Every structure is written in structure tokens, then in C-alpha cells.
Length: 212
Image 1 (cartoon, rainbow, N blue to C red):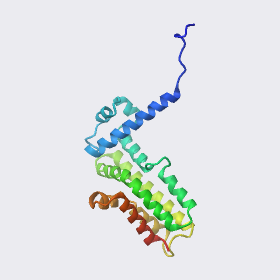
Image 2 (image 1 turned 135 degrees about the vertical axis):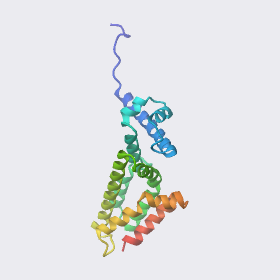
Image 3 (image 1 turned 45 degrees about the vertical axis):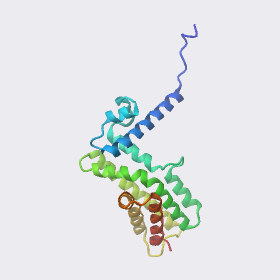
Image 4 (image 1 turned 60 degrees about the vertical axis):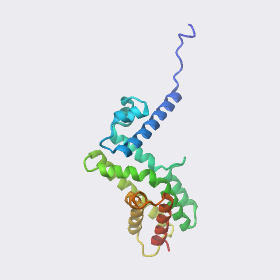
């Protein structure tokens, strides 16, 4: 049998790498388009064109606009570093004895993640009035963020870090409010604060409201 007639071995790593590059290109294009044009006006065709990929590739990877926005939102929650922001938050809580240092770390994570998450959340909020997929994503994102804030509040309570008289539910409510995209919208997008200043404000407010 000649060398030319031999079948080349299937390179699954190359295929996975290409799929990863395609996914990243689609998400980058979609984020840019959604934030510039809005949810309703953005089309899969323009996203595919920007990413230099076929429409079928976009649909096969994400299933449509709703799947794209959900993927962008989920990716934004991870932050900008190699280790996902929630994992870094948990490691901070487990490894830091000073409650104030934990809260300051949360403020720094807020300054990193909020600029990525909040604009997408606000896009979803605006689209939710007329789109059922976006309405479902809005509910899911609110529920998920509240669950995360309860997790953080429980961490403070279990370690005896909450101020006496503050219940777990009150702590959850306070953290949920201070982590809200609406607060980011008011102070950063409308009042012109920097993300860093916003993160410090969140940390100072949490410290004042929750710690002994």
C-alpha cells in the first residue's frame, strides 16, 4: 500500500483546538454586537460574519441568540484571570483569617468582574420584557447571584465574622444589593466612577454593614 493511500490518524486535539478558537471568536463578536446594537437588532448572520465563520457553526455551537447571551454571561462571571473568580473567592474565605481582608478581596473581585457582567445583565434585563429566553436568563442570573451571596454570607456566619444581631438573611440581602448590576449602572455607567472606586465602595459598605 502506498504512503498516499494510508489514512491519516484522526487528530482530535487539533479539532478541539479549532472548536475552542471558533467558540472564542463567536463570543467576542457576539458581545461586541449585542452591546453595540442591542439584543433584538443583533442577528446570527452579523455575528457569524464578524467572526468569519458560517451561520451553521454559530447555531451548532450555541443554538441561537439566547444561548449566546447565556454563554457570554457565564463566561463573564469567571473574571479575567486563569482561575475562576468564584474559586478565588472561596480560596480567600478559606485561607484568610482577617474578615476585613476577605471583604476587601471581594471588593477587588467586584472591580474585576462587574464591568464584564453588568452590561450583559442590563442587556438581558431590557430584552426580558419581550423575549422569553431572556426573561428566563434574567430569573436564573438573579437566583444564581442571590445563592452565591447566601453562600458568602454563610461563610461569614460559620466563621463567627458577622456582626451580632445580623441574621443570615439580612446579610444575604445586603450582599445581594451591593453586588447588583443596577448599583454598578448607577455609580459607574451613569455617575462615572471607576470600577476600582466602585470595588472599594462595595468593600467599605460590606465592612460597615456586616462586620463587628
